[in-house]
Image (cartoon, rainbow, N blue to C red):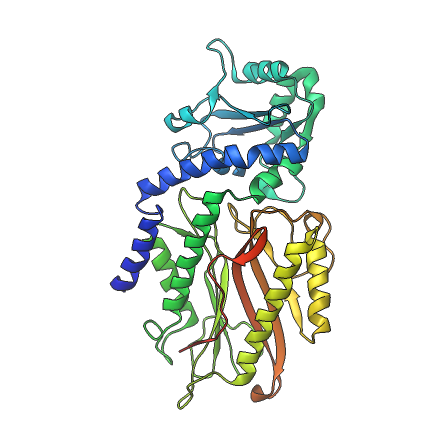
Length: 427
């Protein structure tokens, strides 16, 4: 299946340590160790939490575990507990495992359970010894991936802690920051994954695959799935391929044969097996009519307006304090320039719709309580997701949308991880 294309992608991934699977596992361990040293102390210090307990049971996996367990510990075995104690004097985090563990964990976590202790006895003892002021647990009202502590384990934990149970707090200030910030190595890996995602889009949206008048949008979706699956990676949604057509009654038409004059659009994101980082991108292509060498100017102008909206949002991510600030300032600035904007940008990383500040929502172009009030932090990746629309004269004043999305990173400045679409793809 399109062997030259596949070999080129595989070579890039091998060079980045993302293939073969053994190299990806080794890379994931390096990422975990770097995160525990570079991200966790910052997250605990900034959140004012000096102890964190992550407790999970087999078959009822806390989503947080995939950010804390190494590759050879896919799930908790029976009951597993991780405990982290932040030393306020030296800024060092003590990293402990209680209960079952894997060989890879030996070089990462300190085993603190005594031979004659149960898991809960060990938890109670360690907390007494460390005497923390605030203990975070994985409960959260907004994000499911920060809400993984089961009710049963919560009761066991309270019993084990005794009087120290009064120090338990919902861990949102810590867990969101832990997920929100990327380590330097993760950012470099994200750049490669973004480039690979662009490669998949570029090949799928080309005459090398598309046969105008024969290929359907659904055919492209399955081709993308086949490519991603052959790489040993996953797609965390879709991929979704749709089109807009003159006379169409909706802005996203699915399962359609691709015809000349169509605007086709993709939404695709990938993630690895052991390297749990996600991409999320949307690009647009125009299907040339006979005799055409370029897309109609109204369409190219609309993409340029989309690029301008990207610039506005990125500028506000750089300077604003919260997601709501960035959203409202961006929308107001865009409208003052005559644009018809929608902004629904979200954090991106270990989870596709990631932890951190929401910058608008597709279904709520207004102030967002909770997630929108979260602060913008450095070393955070985002899916810069948005659209602009115009009534296109060439299509009898039909309202046409330019849905675009690129992956960006705020690390001091705000930059694209692998560039952006600035010209319509032509087929």
